[in-house]
Amino acid sequence: MSYAIETQELQYRAGRTFELGPLNLHVPAGAIYGFLGPNGSGKTTTIRLCLGLLRAERGGVRVLGHDVPSQAPAMFARVGYVPERSHLYPNLTVREALALHGAFHRRWDHQAAAELLGTFQLQGDTRIGRLSKGENGKLLMLLALAQRPDLLVLDEPTDGLDPVVRRDVLMALIDFVSESGATVFISSHLVHELERICDWVGVMDRGRLVAEVPMHSFKNGIKRLRVRNAPAQAGDPPFVLLARERGDGASGTEVWVVRGWQATMRQYFEGIGAVLQDVVDLDLEEGFVELLRTARVPRGS
Amino acid sequence: MFAAICRIQWKASALGVALLATLAFIIPLLTVQQAGFSAGDRRGWDLIVMLSAVETAGTLFPILAVILGLTLSVGAWSADHQAEHVYALTLPVPRWHYVLLRFGAGLLLIAPVVAAVGLGCAVALGSFDLPAGLRSYGGAITLRFALAAAVSYAATFALAAGTKRTTAAVVGVLTAVIVLALVLEAFGVSTAVAEGIMNAIFTRPGPFEVLVGPWSLIGV
Image (cartoon, rainbow over all chains, first blue to last red; front, top):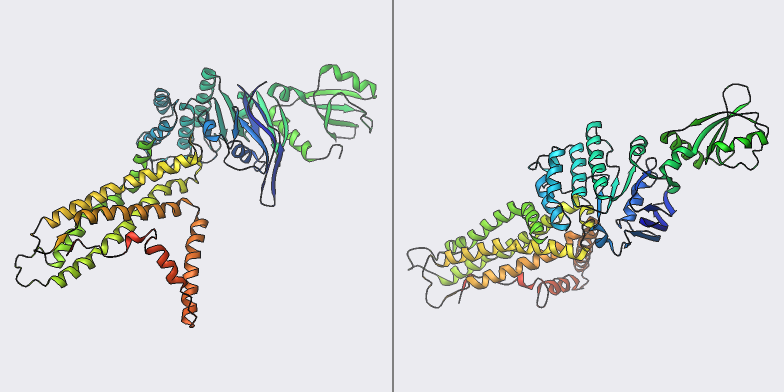
């Protein structure tokens, strides 16, 4: 498998309190990779490290085959970046920002830019400093899409946008990806949003990558099981036991959160003398919450 | 690329450049008027007083050049500082290339003000007949102004390119050394440090030598 973004033992420290890594991130080429994590987990820092905007203490980054930061200019010719906060010059008008961006990108698509300007209902003569948050978000997405990148790196692109604008931005993104087959690396803490569009997911927590799996495996693999009469020692289960908690009431029922569950694994419970009462599918958000919870608490505590 | 950078830099500095170009045009006119060269009655001319007035008025040229350099360098970097340089760093050009584009665009914007100086000199010097024995230096002043503005722009551009901390450190160290030298001299300890620094900067072959010395539009 070839990777659009690949980090090796990437490490970074900001002050005394925040440490990131060692991080081994693998974003498959052509994937829409959702980069999940709570606020302050290190998503933006990771993105900035991947783009050479921050210098890592240790480790390496390759983006589209380019070593970062040494080959960052060549990399940026093929990467569209939407940062968390607008990085555009506030004294320029929308039209001037398009002209400036287009002048630096050889693959700039004037027609696509004009179409997106209409789709997003942006006024060319408006100064960027006067744009609303939603309009700024749309302009950033427009600039990133019209440069026809091979990789889009989107850092919380819809954060703080109203539902209508969010839908517009995501629709434009999906249209572009379906046309071009580009790789998308999109960070968000809005789990439901990523669930709809991503085929890979990576989860950050406290500067560590706690999971990196295909979306279907993430969604299907994490289950909540209701188990009765389970012994104190679970033995060697065929799945990953993420959490084990006492259920409601005094019936001796427990709730197990597991990863890697398959229907054939029911036999395991017969083997340990327990009764599997129920298997509950978790949606991405529940799975995400369970994953973070179990990543933070030592198993069995 | 260069045209795009020029356009945005022009937008950031246009007002300042227009104002300074107007002043640049007016200074030569004021110089000959203040010195009395454009007066109709020449019988009471005192050439020494008049040339002294020309020289005094000429000090406005280096001041204008420094202000121009400062205006253009602030215009070159203010937008990038506001955007924390993220936009510039995500453009597909090496950093040195981007800095050169910014520097070149600012250098180009010196041209209208230099042209205004040249035009002002030409109009001012064409408004009267130069007395015998005197020579005009309109071309030399214009060229020197261009050099002074470029030097001033280059220095302030380099300072403005850094972070606030870097700029403060450079200015702070220079100021501290000079203040320390002055304090020591006030206590009777002769160091000649301040004088040495000033000499290194402002006398030949110092980088700012072009700014000092007489800027006489008319001389012998």
